[in-house]
Length: 543
Image 1: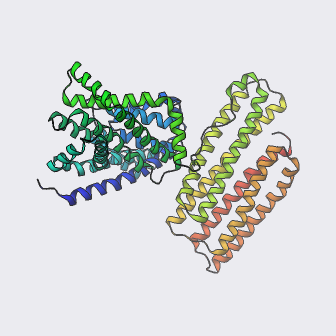
Image 2 (image 1 turned 45 degrees about the horizontal axis):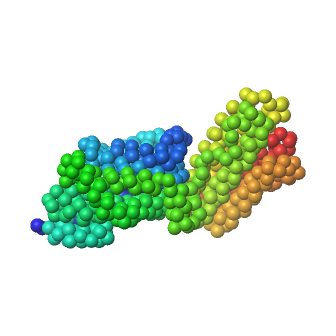
Image 3 (image 1 turned 60 degrees about the horizontal axis):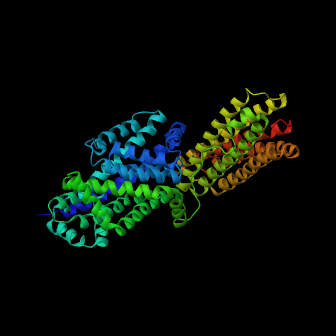
């Protein structure tokens, strides 16, 4: 038969490009629209690896694509919504879930990819609501992922009808090790383990390959499907790469175990085939399910060890921002309100660390215009919002307990200070968004303007740090010094406004750059104002 190799190559590469872009789009939507509600449900239903396995099974059975579930899991880990241990549980469940789909006649999400792309585009381009826009990104990204998978799978599908291709696989599969490589290679090419398993079912049904030769190919299919996780983790953070590594390690370890016990495993499947009167196609599906369920049962107790292994295998600092508070023990509210109040202050300082980091990242983005810096800034601001809300709820509950008048005043001031720190995070995010606008519009500041920005930023950043130190140490002397320094920052802002207007009049800066420069230094003084509010609480010794 005639094969159009150009069509195969073009469709595969186009599908790969769409796949990568869709992952990025979906991840952005998840990070910006997930909010606390999604984090709550994910934490609730994947609080331990066993529940993660069940979630993985359910998600894969629903959307009929373990690759899709893996991509989503990598995205959630990258966004800081899942830990590595939780993600490994979901990956294990996805491996089992993909075997369920071979027994169930259900809808394929890939059939709805184009409508999802349309719906996502409508949400993105025809609505102004931010939440709807972000949901549109998610819908468009998911639709694009599955359309891309269909495109890549369709591009490689003609290969399965080549007799030389089928003959080559049969010859190689006579060796178990080579059979594993064949299965892995096929799935790498076709980008769908269900398709390669379908080929295997046809070969086994046609008696072109025996069960002992088919099983290693089947094991290899499971390794090959991990390429999707690897692609999804490209350009992602260290944590996401570790999820992909765990997926590969999980299937490779399972394959090694089953190869060692290939003879008894083959005998077991043959016994099932004879006893249950399975068809050849169902026998392969049954073997697939047995492999993944057995692999999960064997490795599940060692999830911690697997997480440790991939952490050592893929070293580096985990860049995922932790969203949860550290010191808010709900039991202390009723049992020891005074201690709970002390912990609330510790959490306030924890929140302050994130506010300081977000502000630092916003300036780093202005200097270097690195997109990853902007992403870190957005994630840090999300963490600030989450901790602020948790701390607020904690303090509201604590306020109903028996507190002394001074403790009640301290509680109110911690509540107000938390709001100030949250506003610093908002200013940091606004600065990142403003810088992103400057990059897109190709607005450039003069060297003099950049030097002035560095001056006011340095003073403001140091001011925020010292305000937090005064709170931590109840340092009234430092708080009094901050009053003078706050006035100096305000005077500096006024002076910078005048000098920048002079540069505008002399043609050294464009009008657009002038407006944006004023916006930036205005954000800096507002940040200093919020930090000053913290210092004022220290001055009256009420925090």
